[in-house]
Length: 141
Length: 122
Image (cartoon, rainbow over all chains, first blue to last red; front, side):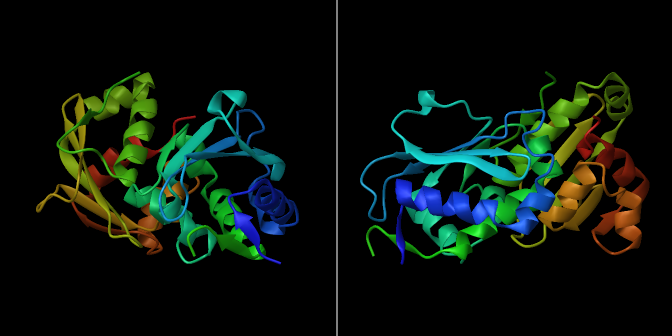
């Protein structure tokens, strides 16, 4: 059954997908071990989303430790912050577009230690690819 | 932290990534000395997107801008993962060239020197 992106139910499906993915476990062994590897995604309105939505993803040593929507960015401590429009995130969640390509193009603005991103680029790609492991439905469609 | 000057418009994602890595690396004294003597420019093109950035080395000053200069001192083209491997020190630029994982043009001696600014120094 498809789950609505974004929702807490969707966040739990993503967590399950990450934690059952061998490529993520293998490539992410060092992610977040001696630095803050948690992510905060800011999804800006458009394409059916009517208000800015924040999605928190805790990640450490190749595992997802937490995944949920939050009301206020100050609720969490994230080492990496990514912002982009709902319209831009949709094709990534659908598996039609590559997240890293979006970062390179500047479609997604990323803040955090980029040397960690470069060192763990395969992990980042594997986490993004895990979105294809479950079916999502979208606002505005 | 050392500053890399942004030339022109707001940087694309590739440029922002390269800028942050160079700034972090320039804080390493030895590298600062090496880069300090360089004069030239390096175009980096990401293969899948075709997005380019030009890094300008001017005897101690470093700048970065979107797009590719028409006649750069050196040019490299690589996929993001190859750039990531070079930047993180997992892939030596010379090995990447010899194995065809990256394409390069221009002054290869200067390319290898300038690429030191992109390699994480620990």
